[in-house]
Image (cartoon, rainbow, N blue to C red; front, top):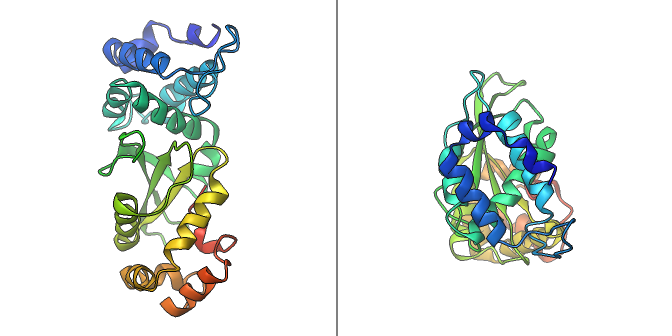
Amino acid sequence: MRSYANFDADFINKVGQQRFDGFMTSLIKANPRCATCGNSGDYLIGNLDAVLNDFYTVVTKRAVKADGSLVDGFDDFLKEAGEQASKAKGAALTLSVMSQRWDELTHGGWVLNRFEGAIPDIETKHKLDALFTRIDPTTGLSGSKSVEMKNWSSARSISGSTYEQFKAYLTGGSDFEYYFSNGLNDAMKGQFQNVFKSSSKANELFDANPEFFIRQDISDADMLIDLANKGLLTNHPLLDFVH
């Protein structure tokens, strides 16, 4: 396997032999696709070579501080990814997004600060958040952006802990983005739109951070509810945080 050959002694020393072995074991148990052996595998994992290439790119290019060490929290991320197959599956999306969509993640001067996360993914129970920071080029003020990675098999409603997480992001006032499995973008925009069809939730979320909505020319909760019920939010800039 060509991608596996990238993992020389320097690479393994950087991430730690135990972390490397744990992740590789869980990744194989997660049943990735295999181009050479013909195994169709789990589509949420994707092709094994691709995951390994993404892993290599993140460790050597994306999650590296100026002094060459790995960013804070990466060790915990990799440790958790190696605990079980479902968590390796969740980690595969994080590695893919950070490897292949880096320009998108860092557009506007964002820099990876650390891996973090207090609320685990519903399906994988894996804390997959990454925190980016920057000095805003317009205001000169420092800011942060939390990035959520959701490797879900199907669209989920924004309820329970997912709703509380969304509300927490709004209340915090910092930037945030959600990245979902391939093909779920439109469906998840619909799920977020459904939240705002509820008068009580729309008012609760609008009151949590009016400026978030006003910046998108939504002046009050009534307007938010109306747009949602007319199905106009799925193509509205308000939901540009969904990827």
